[in-house]
Image (cartoon, rainbow, N blue to C red; front, side, top):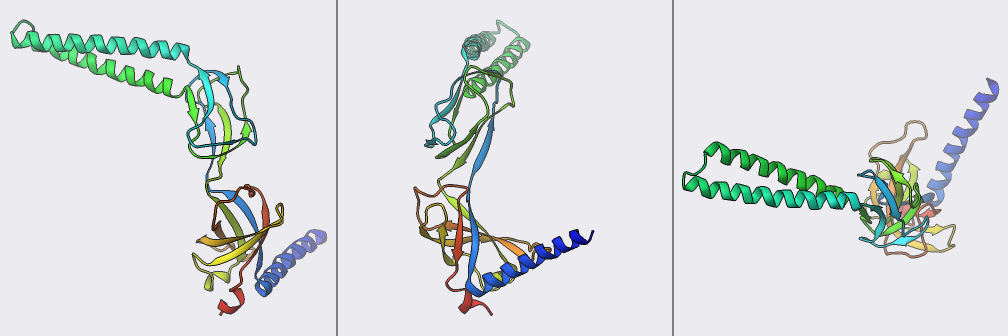
Length: 248
């Protein structure tokens, strides 16, 4: 029990010391995170036939990132299309006959209802076929493939994890007093450990609540320009040049 109390005390001292140090020199550790990331699941039950990108590969918005064998769904769509055209023709013919009083209004209403049902079935089959190809919603990279080619999956199966590189964000945990002088749009720089380079950035948003234990708050920044050598997961030291002059 005594050791546990000592451990907690050590952790709290480290947190307080790091806050004091940060307030003195304006340096804060930052983590690069993607603005968007997604774990894509299957909308249909089918067999995977193509995975053009592997873990770590970059892709562009609109690129095909996974494809299913949908021969059966395509055939069902064609059948639904043919049935819809037939129902439309029957309904149009019934309307013409009704104008000559050669059929009953009830029969026309029945055909109208059947046509609507055929339209709904066609839309269902169209959406299934649409789910046969998964295209990238944005430019980015593959984090992880959760299936292999030739595997059959069920609807809802997790397929592929991706992240966006269109806009990377920088997460910073700063002392709770910093929002007194730190504002959205304020400039700062960050030296990324993995590249050894320093990049210009600015504050994008400031967290809504202070963590009561550590007395810190989340601040999110963004790079001022697009970068090709910085990736999500990298980290570095951020420096605020105006920290000392703006702090009350």
